[in-house]
Amino acid sequence: MQRRHVLALALAAATACSFNAQAAEWPTGKPITIVVPFAPGGANDLIARLYAKEIGQELKTNVIVENRPGAGAVVGTAYVARSKPDGYTYLAASNGTVTNTLIRSDQPYKDSDIEPVAMLAIVPSIIVTNPSNPANNLKEVVENAKKSGRTINFSTAGMGSTPDFVGAMVKLETGMKMETIPYKSGAENVAAVVGGQTDMTSEASMVTLPLVKAGKLKALATTWDHLDSAPDIKTTAELGFPNIRIGHWEGLYVRAGTPAAIMDKMNAAVLKASQSPTILDALKAYSVTPGTMTRPVFIKFTQDERARLGKVVKAAKMQPD
Image (cartoon, rainbow, N blue to C red; front, side):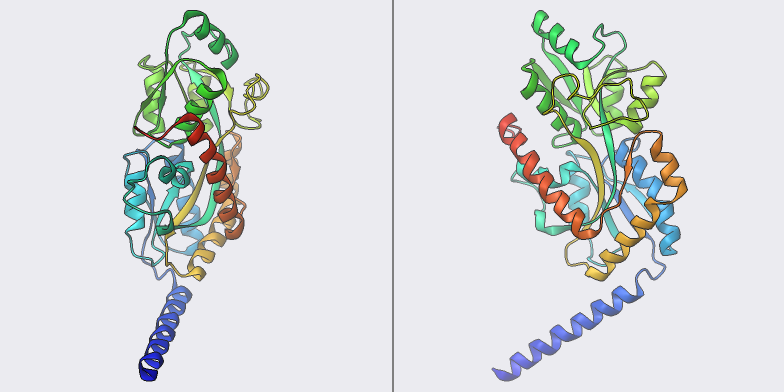
């Protein structure tokens, strides 16, 4: 019995030494993959690609962005949850990463299968409509909808996505008749509004602002605290809906069991990248806040968001029947 105990301790020590050596050498020149769980063109995809080059330069290796869309980020998340815990496969996570298991209990992964590593950015969300809509802001949309009694079609980037939560919040706070229409990405749900297939959506400023400025969309409100690059767009709080508040945050997650030293190295690389002139200049135009969180702070942020948005899930009955 004693011999077995000694062997177990020896094996544990050898494993720890192996992990420490792996962390010290990481990355070894092998490419790092960032999995975006949405189709190309959305905020998650744009930010991941923006950071990939800077992180690669900092870590002296190639960083590849790979899109694996489907089921409101579940497909991409499950892929990372099944990857090797070696620090070479990351998830470009968003709100849905911390809320998907609150909405559905049959996910192909557990929350404990992945771990937060680093915040990349917090992007303001903007509620938009087709320019043909006579309403000039969210308050007018609500008033017109209640007068007409019609149901508003609100497109989202899939169940549990940030637009899905915006739709749920709008429905809760305004009492409008609404139906959410899921798409695979932010680019697709916005295209549906541009094309007149749906009435409204909410999407990141990086996606919506260029279309607003081009006259293809009309901005109704921002669900974030500020939108410095477009001060004429009022916040939901200014329009009388303070409880409609959410931003498109994006951070890196990795398979649980990845050595902490590797996660800390990646966090440090993200912090360095977030201060590069390339990223700062690119994000400033859309009022995006770059990631400046240490790993413990990011972990606390995700826990707080899960608790806050969990209340929305229950109140809005976002779980499928």
